[in-house]
Length: 330
Ligand code: AHR
Image (cartoon, rainbow, N blue to C red; front, side):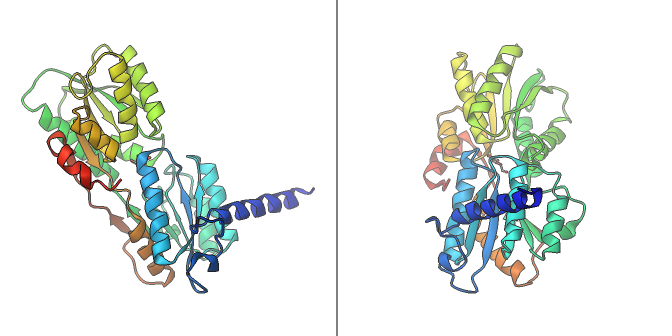
């Protein structure tokens, strides 16, 4: 088989696989099968993966919103790999979807494929995570949280917590996926706030890839290598929850012997917070589906949209956890 024929075959197979994951959920993802009838929008959505409780809630929100809005969603799970996202986007281009939406696993390396979408006149909406492309014409808008701000909120809580105390505070940091916007920005925002006070020292910082298993594994290593840990700053709840297991197995009390700052606000983290095991959670809202559907419709219709749409989020401490738990939606 010639190389060109082999490439065409792989592309067709991918297109079929992606179509089979359409929002209809029944394996029928063609435009008309989604209930929108002819004229309904088809959106190709490339999701990061299923690495965390946050991500599961985000996927459900997007799929539910697509159904509600009569949008045919061609859903593709990249399993935390950029190469899979690039393949999915190319397949969406081949299938001539109306709009491409995606949550980029890492920040860099998107210009070529985004240019391909632009050349094919398919608008792109970034959701949840940003890209570092200098050419802003490569995407229509970006909907998601301000991750730098989240890192700052985490730092602000710490500064307040240790106000008036002079002893050194040893911090270990569980970073999100290396090169991802939330890992880069949450680290930067937190660092910016604590650098003003020399008593705060990040003694170890490593990626836990936003997963519970990796969070536990890296925390176990921190506990072995660091003689004194006062605070854990985890870039997401899943890593914090994995770390809690490691701390307990090491005979220490999470939330007391080691204070824990986390980001996201999933139900399991609120439960851990109500139990005194997490001290503070900086909220990051995954329920972006409805806003995303509104945006793709506007973008397709050529209506003006804001370049950057930020989600509104709060900060929750232990005293609020039990009361807030029943109303948590994810
Ligand atoms: O991009 C959002 C981040 O990705 C969430 O904080 C994390 O839980 C997820 O995996």
